[in-house]
Image (cartoon, rainbow, N blue to C red):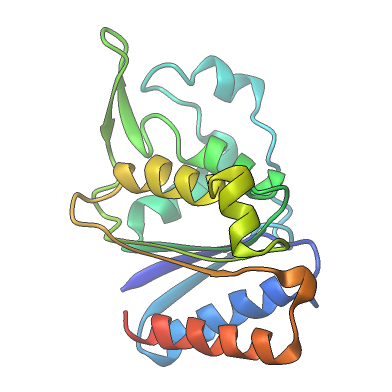
Amino acid sequence: MRIQVVHCHPLTESYDHALYLATVETLRANGHEAIGTDLYREGFNPAMTEAERRSYMGNDYDTRAIATYVDILKKVDGVILCFPHWFFSMPAMLKGWVDRVWAPSVAFTYDPKDNHLTPALANIRLIGIVTSYGSPWWVVHLYAGNAGHKVLMRGLKPLCAKNVRDFFLAHYDMDHSTERSRHAFLDKVRARISRL
C-alpha cells in the first residue's frame, strides 16, 4: 500500500517524532510505500488563504497553494496521522492541514442545493491515528469525551472508501509516562503497523 504518514510536532526530539519515525520505518520494512509528511519541517502554513475561503463553498476550491498535498492525498491508499493531543485536540498546524487539504473537490463534493457532501476519497482504504495525551484516559473521556477521536473518526473517515479500515492508538498520561511505558507503546505501534 502507498500510505501517507502525516506528522505534527515542533520538536524532533519529542516522543511523538519517535512515533512518527517508527511508523514510517515499520511501514517500509513491511513492504509499504510510506510517504512522510512532516508539517513543521516542511514549513506547512496552516492558515487558510483568502482565495481558499472564497472558493470553499463550492467545487472550484482553489488548491494552488497546497497542490502537492492535494496530489498526495488523492493518490495514497491510506493516511496515518502522528501527533500529540494538546488541550484535548490536535495541534493548530494539523488542524490547518485538515481544513485546507480535506476540502471541497478534494475530500468531498458539495451540493449547494441541499448542503449535501459526497465523499471523494474512495482511494483511501485505511486511516490510522498514532497519538499521545498528557492526561490519563479517564480525564480525556470524562472532560472531553475523547473529542479528538470523534473529530478524526467521525469527520475524516466518512470521506474515505466505504470499507475503510481504521485504528486509533494512544499513549495516555504522557505527563506521568516512564521509559518503560513509552517503549511499550512504541512496540504496540510497531506491532499494529506490521499487521497492515
